[in-house]
Image (cartoon, rainbow, N blue to C red; front, side):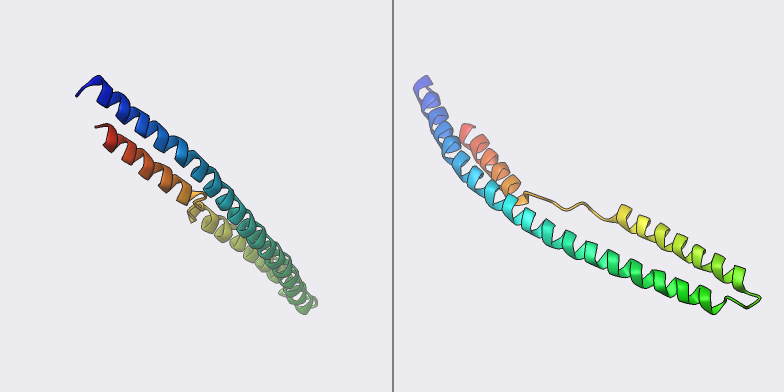
Length: 124
């Protein structure tokens, strides 16, 4: 293969890459905006759920302890409520540890990967 053909091929690949940079920037802006909206929506719902759940569980625990106030099982009930909270804490920790992190910007990564593959193929 001649030097002129190699230079032409490299020039074509360079043009392709330069044209794709603008596409990447538009795609990045779109994906960042979508990720931000999704994150705000999910965090808002999660905070509301956490606050409501904690208030509900707190009042249920207070009701259970108040029901056992003048009984011989008062200390067992109090320790049972504390053990239940510890169990909830351990289970939630295990659930968080087993979840896969969300993939952000996966469309952009796929596009860049496919373009790099196309560049490698054209330079062979």
